[in-house]
Image 1 (cartoon, rainbow, N blue to C red):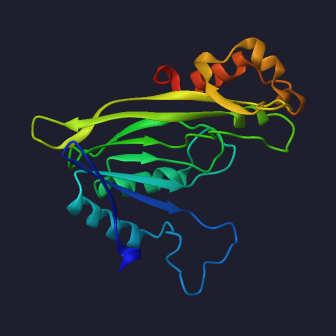
Image 2: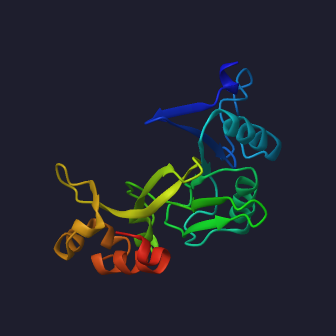
Length: 221
């Protein structure tokens, strides 16, 4: 059936399976006639999907909607799910939902030797929040995962290289005043005109750089 199908993307002879899940729907009920409209993080189904993906593809990506909003570190639940993904052979995890960036980590299964790359949260790609106060500036920073995959000496498809490109949302009440750009290309002058400073005076180009350094270390560009 269509709702049981695994999405497979193929390029250069490499098949990539992509799975998506969410911790919940924020109280929105699933359609009675289509309960599979959203894939929830339920272990039995997740494991079955991963096992099927592993048979169909060379490389498996899971995109979970998880974690706690506005927290810059992964939660215990995120780590527990990451261990499940690792155990069953997932290769790459691209996390969303917290609305701020979280760490990037390469996990290793000592029993199998399998490695899995985890982006716990890539934050917001574009954002304009109505809230004000400390920490609002964090929501203006996001990331684009930069992952290179290829075959190793045994022919297995693995992560060859990885990084993250930091982006920032600029806000001005004018035509074309809202845009997202690479943080590396964003200027201090632009940051001073970003209207988010009216909601969080801490926001600046320097603030965004220090945030990326704190969470991502030398991985970001």
